[in-house]
Length: 167
Image (cartoon, rainbow, N blue to C red; front, side, top):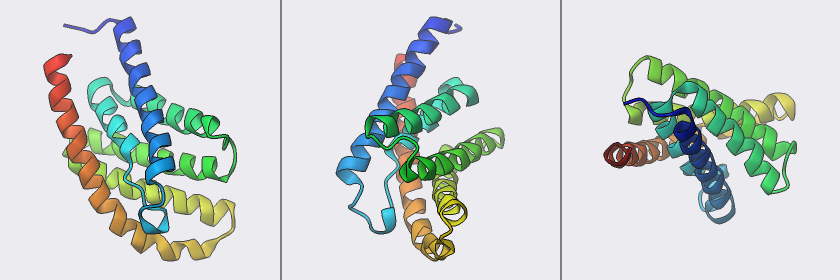
């Protein structure tokens, strides 16, 4: 049975709100636990769920809304944090799209997305803020991105399993 447009809109709106909430929660409460700005990527769980359940367009809506509204609510809109987050989410979203088209496993897609998010953030700092030395932290970010991508992929896979029972 096909989902009505209204029902789909409600689900995507709720997923966006959850992604924004997780992003803000993580930046406030978990943001400084790991060195070099490594984060778990809780909001990426929602991006993974969205691309599987609703497709590329809706995943892009969720990711872009997360960056814009999350930064707006924290008073950081169009500041350096915003541009760095946007660079990360663009490359991360691109990885999600390619991974889905290749029919890769959700955990693999999550790991690649996590790596690309870190790479996108570093690229923004290097090119827009003229800080080429930032490339030196990339190995550390990769060491964080791989296990965090595995964790978020596993959680997204479980969330989808539970959602398939409900939706």
